[in-house]
Length: 110
Length: 113
Image (cartoon, rainbow over all chains, first blue to last red; front, side, top):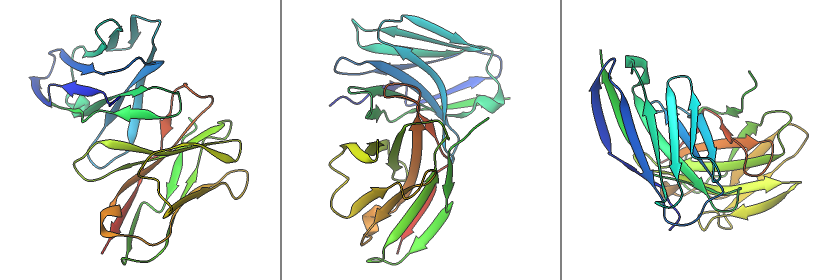
């Protein structure tokens, strides 16, 4: 299966702390995307990282990609209560079909 | 900021009934997608659509499902005869090109009773 798998499944931290979530996948990819989902809501795109990139930043978000280990990490720095959500990685094989993992449920305690 | 819009936000239907879920992708996007998420489970790919035809589909997208772009702005998913297990959140998405960022709508909750 191509599916990305995130770990941990659940993460609870204090506001202001950093949160790190990991994603592992099984086969070669063209790119990997991270999404956030608040309960019962749509998927909000965070960052796309291509297979020839190793690191990308967007505001408080930092994503790394290690294609040799078939893994990616999402770091949220200085977390806020509003960051509470589920975070998913999505990997593609063909560019049209993305596979989502089961997600990491992040709780940021004020 | 442009966004993908979906209607209805929630629909309850009886088993065996036909359902059409509607989506308006972002206007300059060329690729359109449907994904679904059964409650508590992962987001699953259903189908991708480009140049007025299906480009890829998953095993979930069987003969009960069909997609259509009836005009220049709408993109629809039809479920011909709904089953209980079709109950899920259905997400429409679009992207400019294959392999680019995919933008999702807020989803349509479908409850089959």
